[in-house]
Length: 225
Image (cartoon, rainbow, N blue to C red; front, side):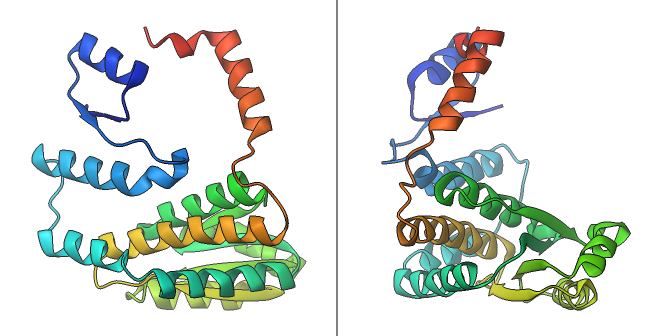
């Protein structure tokens, strides 16, 4: 176990119980700090021998973060589709990249106040694809890694689901780390740009804070004992 944190109570608790602490800089908003958290976590897991990631893969993923203009352009395209399409939003991704779909769903929910479901390919072929095909009102955001057999399976599922509208996002990069980083970055950009277009404050999370207070009052989990 390693505690990756900006400090505070989590760092104090980890040191008290003998858990290693990796301190990162505080971000302007919690979700904006994902690069520091991700790369620190990646380095910690690699140092512990729990994962094997070539340094070249990590370096390529960091270089992708320099392509701000391209990322913002793709995020704007996605925002335009979200604004112009209608129907129940479903975010699909192949199994190795399902975490990106979950991240996209979470970013849209918190920043843009936009609800979505996620689906993992090929798992959704067991059940959900039947409902989507019957309803015909789903709008599908497909996250395509450009990697076989996953890309073919993804597009075949989309075709069989017969959605009302489809938007395909290419997960850029020559390896899994890079594609995950690109998709995560795009999720954040898209959610904030969507919120701004709709006149929504992406940093306002009143309902989340209200529920957090309920959890703390009910369980006492905020004490970190």
